[in-house]
Structures are given as C-alpha cells and as structure tokens.
Amino acid sequence: MRPDMEAVAEQVFTALADPTRRGILAALAAGGPATATDLAARLPISRQAIAKHLALLAEAGLVTAEHGERRRVRYRLRSAPMQVAQQFLAALARDWDGPLAALKDHLDGRTTSS
Amino acid sequence: MRPDMEAVAEQVFTALADPTRRGILAALAAGGPATATDLAARLPISRQAIAKHLALLAEAGLVTAEHGERRRVRYRLRSAPMQVAQQFLAALARDWDGPLAALKDHLDGRTTSS
DNA sequence: ATAGTGTGCAACCAGTTGGTTGCACACAGG
DNA sequence: CCTGTGTGCAACCAACTGGTTGCACACTAT
Image (cartoon, rainbow over all chains, first blue to last red):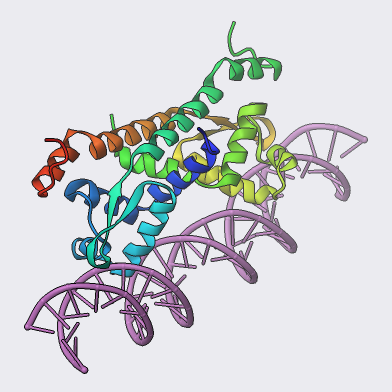
C-alpha cells in the first residue's frame, strides 16, 4: 500500500514548509478538531485563507473533513502521511551515506575508506 | 545543540518539496560529489538554475561546497539536517495522536477513550 | 418572511520562485 | 597574448502562492 511514497512525501513537505500551515496544524493539535471559522478566530488571517490551507492539507491527507450538523465542517488531524514522509527521509539518508556512497567515492578515484 | 530544530526542518522541507532539487540530490547520490556544470550536463536545466538550487541546498545544510583546484567547486551530500527533520516529524506525530490528543478530545466534551 | 451564521467560489493583488539569458572575471594551455 | 573552460552576479520573465475582499448559497431561529 504505497501509492507513490515520494508523491505523498512531497505533499507533506510542501504543506509543512509553510509557517501559517504549521500554525493551523498546531492549533488543531492544541484545541482538537475545529472548523475553519473557529480557526480564523484564533489565527491572525481570514477564514478564506484558512480554508485554502485546509484544502491543501486535506489534499496531503494531513487533515480530514468531517461534515456535521448545519453545514458545519470540522477538520481533524491525521498523522499517517507524516509517517510516510519519515520513511521517505530515512530512505534518502540511507541512500546518501550508506555503503553505496562509499563505493561510489571509491570508483570515483577517491580512497574514502581503507 | 539544537539551533532551532523547527527552522532546520522548515529549510529541509522547503528544499525537498521541489522535484528539481530532489533530482539534483539524486544525481549527487548516484554519481558522487559533483560541480554545478557537471550537474547541468545531466539535468535538463541551465547551470545557473542549478547553482541557485545548490545555494539553497547549502543554506539548508543538505550539501557542502568543497573548493578545489582552478576555481572548481564540488558539492557533497550531507544527511545530518534530514535526521533533524525526521525528529521534527516524529515529535509532531507524537503531539498529534499521543495521549495528549485523547485528553484534549475529552476536555472538549467528547468521550473518545472511555 | 427575514435576519443571522457559516460555507464555498471567484476575482484580484503583491511577493516569491524557478527559470532563462547575458556578461564579467579567473585561470590553465596553446 | 589570446582562447577555452568554469564560476559568479544581475537583470529579467512567467508562473505560482499567500492573502484579501466580495458575493451567493444553505440552513436555523425568531
């Protein structure tokens, strides 16, 4: 079940690279699931700006929309995509300074090890 | 020794969010340390564009510049900042669906866990 | 019926970003 | 001396992004 791990990681990275988005996620983590208008009351930007960010976060799978009574929509955190991103980072680091890198350096004419 | 972990993570996320940048890093991982012109030969963009990306990657600490003979500059991968980013992701995930989140939900009037 | 509250959609705007071209400079070899 | 190669800097450009405002729509309550 890896629907293109790199694509998920890219979306997570894009989402988490923005301070405002991290602020929204922190607000959700601190106060539990909330609606866009609720978040707009706590953050210094407009509801529509928050709605755009929530759409992007939902696209990345970091939040899920829960439709409640009277057209209200609550957003809840989802940590699963972040674990995918973590694995992606781990895989990258393994590729970079793993034994392959040393071999490459050797073939490159450098005597990195031994 | 944490010079603002979140700042490092943000730079890593910004750097890794761009496909071209990941391509440059992949080329470095595959072929070992290389110069900007060398990378420009393998990638479909100009040397100057690559130089800009390398500057950003160096700023994030993901590559280091090694000044060699005759004004040549080779860039080498550094995986340390990625491990910081990994820890940041782990801390976030812990904050989200850890016991605190359940408590918050409870205080919010919801009976998530008995 | 109408007012109030909450959501979604679209237009618009300024700043950033990814990319290009062009040029100036440093240095080794003919 | 010049020519070739490699680097750095700056200007410029199109596209994207983060943010705003305005408006239309849905639904509940008075």
